[in-house]
Amino acid sequence: MARHLIDMNEMNSSDFEALLTAQRSAMIRDIPTSSAVVSNETPTLTKAELAELLFDNVGLNKREAKDMVEAFFEVIRDALESGDSVKLSGFGNFQLRDKPQRPGRNPKTGEAIPIAARRVVTFHASQKLKALVENGAEASFSRAD
Image 1: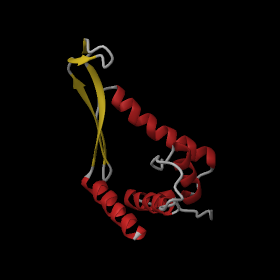
Image 2: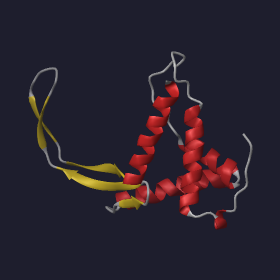
Image 3: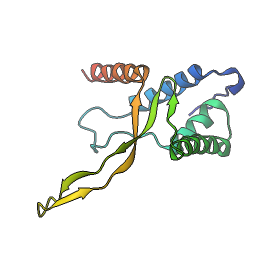
Image 4: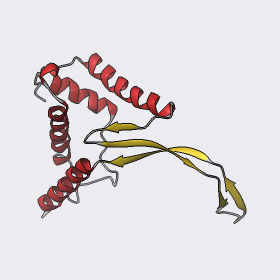
């Protein structure tokens, strides 16, 4: 993969978003779309792959790229842990939701068992992300024709 150097000081968030979208699209194009598919799993972009994309496209060294990805997720994790919502413009919102206790059943015995109250993290994609995903899915389906 060719390494392109980009000055982060000259890159705004929409440029960075476009860069990641282009890289993700390139990765998706390389996924087989016929009977050659050997797994039912959806392709996954890992933290290591994100770091590799930063290395390849932004010009960070591998250690800096890995640290940047880790720091990004740590900030999100810390915010959620302290009870804050996280809003990423053009991407979506991570929010906390308190779910009350509710009745449940043991599937083997049918016995009624209470499901404890708990706090969960929810993610709501932005309209912009939804449109990108929808358009990307349409492009993938039209490519298979």
